[in-house]
Length: 107
Image (cartoon, rainbow, N blue to C red):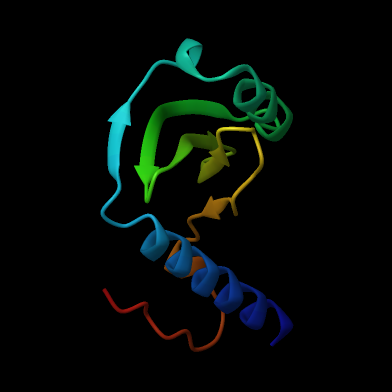
């Protein structure tokens, strides 16, 4: 039951995050185009994963950098502000890995 609550909380946070940056225009950029503080934060949070994509988002005048990663077969998106502060990592959990009833997120 505790794991189900944790997963539900993660889904709620991920949904809130995606709503907060919804409408933001994603611009694909190169890893070398990241500001130094963001690059350092990426290196600290990659944890042996592989970078699949990098994008820059501007939402309400604030710049964010999204790093799409994969590690041990699991996808995870990292989100940082321009100063390299983490903004809630987003992990994708396959439905088969979730035990118990889980309510699907509404679009």
